[in-house]
Length: 276
Length: 282
Image 1 (spheres, rainbow over the protein chains, first blue to last red):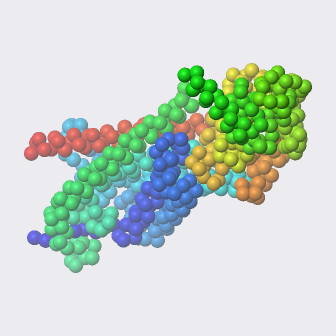
Image 2 (spheres, chains in turn red, green; image 1 turned 180 degrees about the horizontal axis):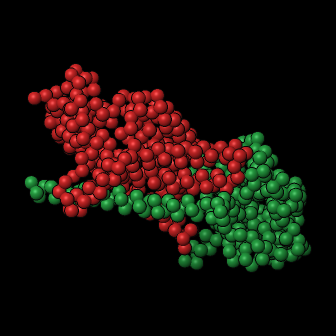
Image 3 (tube, each protein chain N blue to C red; image 1 turned 180 degrees about the vertical axis):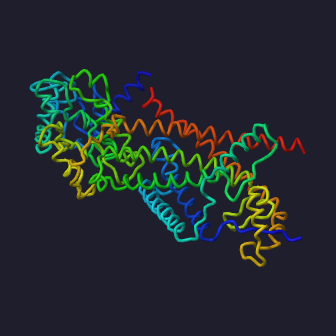
């Protein structure tokens, strides 16, 4: 019995994702040392990219890449055949409450998700909101004297405030939330590389999409592939996958600790200045 | 024991004699002479140039004669300015335009040459050990300007948070991490010719800000600084219906981040817990 493999992301979408996360990681890596310039780890991080001015260049370059991808994504949505399954609808609220009931043991039934779960939609629009905030505030801070032709200096300082807060918010969402859900919980999730999702995973995670795909399955559709080797590969490389999982877990925990420590510091500083 | 200490004493004196003619001062002020010998003034100046007196005494007898004529043990700030002017007339005349000098002349405490450049341990401003080297300037200025007791005692009404507010700027962040793009205190406030903001000749007077910010290698072509005014050391803000926008942004994000942390870790925990539940059921 051959196992079905479903197309989840097109090559275009995968390249967008890779460019977006690569620039995101570079931006976070070169940006956070600026938040705590006197700590030992930030001087280490700055040295690892070859000094402060290299850091600035990488940050600006990655920022341009991220803005470019974000703009392209909007254009892509306008030009491509529009899909509405990423938009929020009432079912997301039902799914959310059902999932909470399931987690808190009020119900034995897990909600049946469609192509995108409510959490994925929140992440998608969160990333969109973040890209807009970071993009505009970053551009204002990049050329302050150009910006000051049109805006008062106070607005540029507020842009800086937005930039650091949104960076912390987005990094928690990506490095903890997104990493856990998509790459740790569903290890080894290769659909961001191959664009394919195996039948069992689709059935388990997106049952409604699976049902629809099977119902409307046209004969010889290019949307649904049928390579047998994917399943074999997964069984064969159990050691490699286990080792990869161990390494990923350690990196994930390290990033988690760093993010928690950093958000604690940022919050403590803000509370000291603004609340107390 | 006494023999050894006498030998050491003689050795010290001998080495001091080799290096300089200041052997008479060295007997009682070894720390000062050592500092002086490391400084840029050594070999060009002698103790007498600043302290007066006569070091050309006969023999190696330490006598009161050293301290005759115009000897000054601890020159006052005004005297310091006078004898620095002998060799550094341009710098001193620039300094005499500054607010520091104005206050000194009024008989109030303020920075004179030695407060910034050091007393005996003066180095070229290109020397990394110098207190006037670009990288060391913030600390040099902060010595007085971040010192609350000192600033309050003077009743000048100068805020002591200037170094702390500077620390929030990109100028400082670049400076502390060894970046090329940096500006320290003296880049904007001038080193010798430091004036109050209200002075029309001051580099930080709003009318002169375009020239100050637009220095070569800095923000060239900056001609709009005053128009969209604001003070770099102050927390500027935009008010929306009399609410401080900075405060609103901060509160918004504090709530968002607390909410996000609770939700992210809560869902991770609940997800893991529900998996154990499934395993038990099966």
